[in-house]
Image (cartoon, rainbow, N blue to C red; front, side, top):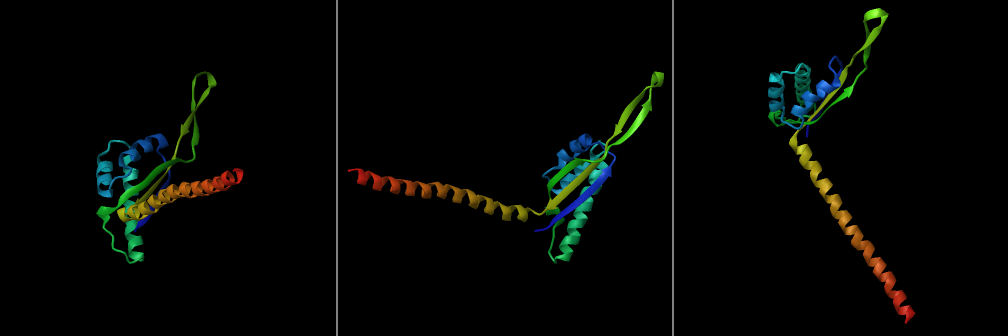
Length: 156
């Protein structure tokens, strides 16, 4: 199980435009995501491409540190999201001494890559919890029935 994180902060792309790009690659394999980003016409696709490539390099370094074998073709974009960064405020001079405000928005983009076996190992743990929840109501029903039976006998 290899997981790597890469972050890009204060990039001069509006969060709304960056979200359009990251929605195209969320949940895909890394090779497919890089191919999509390479040919996407949006301006935000280039920094996101570099960020995903950086996350792949981070995964390679993490695998080397822990002495694990990693197949880069198996890496999947587990999470990718955009947060709003600081907004720069500028002013545009207008007629009759007025000024209009211009907002230059920035973004923080985060990518988390993982191998598929990380998702498989987490899946059985979540399936075991509902089984325990199903057994709990039957255990509660038995004491209630036992509690009712003695009172019925005492009433006769």
